[in-house]
Image 1 (spheres, one colour):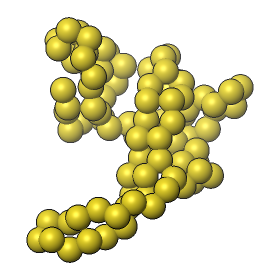
Image 2: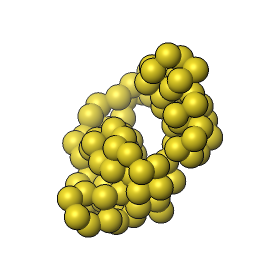
Image 3: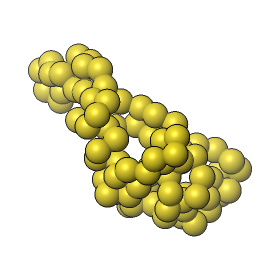
Image 4: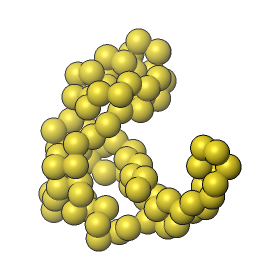
Length: 89
């Protein structure tokens, strides 16, 4: 299930329950803190230090481009649980 809003912990948990424990895609704000080990830092900073890997993608119209993608399983402080985050730029 996917939603285009910035999901709070309640929204993400409710959407997951709605689809019987299925995966939910939601936006996380870049200023929300993620805890990696003992240190909490804003999401923009955590993905800036680990920029990801370049991948060739096909853009609408057939043109090819390069997108940077990163992923991490981290504790989202405002959700008080671990989430699998994916960043694409």
